[in-house]
Length: 190
Image 1 (cartoon, helix red, strand yellow):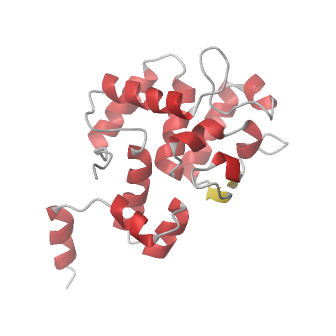
Image 2 (cartoon, one colour):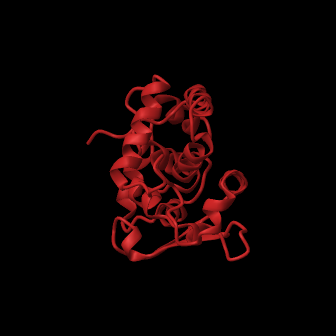
Image 3 (cartoon, rainbow, N blue to C red):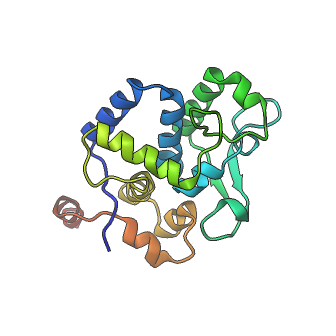
C-alpha cells in the first residue's frame, strides 16, 4: 500500500512560502495546519463549520468536536487543538472576521465563498504541493506526518492511536515512517 509522503523541514518551508505567495494564503495555511497539527482528513477539513472551531465569543475552542456525519468512520470524536493550530486559527479569525462571525458557515471556503468538498480539499493540497515541487505528497501527508512525529517524539502508541482517531492500533502503526536512521538511533539507546 503506497503511503503519502512525509515532508522534510525544507519541503515544509517551501510549501509555506508557496502558500504565502498565493491568494487566500491565510485560508490555505489554516487547511495545512488542520492537517499537520491536528491530523484531520480532507473530508473532516471540508466538513468543519465555524462553530466547531470557535466558541460563541469567537475564541478558539480547546477541543474540536466532530459529529458522526463529519468523520470518515461515521463515529463522532474530539480533536484536541495544540498551540500551533490555535495560533493559526487565531490568525484566520483576524483575517476573516465576517466569515467567522457566521457560526453556521463552512470554516474553509472556496473563492466563490462556498464551502469546500472533500475532493476540493484534496485538489487544493495537490495544487499546493505541485507548486512547491513536492512529489508524492497528498492531502493525507499532513495526517501521516502528525502520527509519525508523535511516535518519533516517544508518545505512547495507544495515545497516538487515540489522537489519530483510529479504531485499530495496526492502522496507526502503518502510518509511522521507518527508515535506517531511526533504526540506528533506536539501537544506540541500548
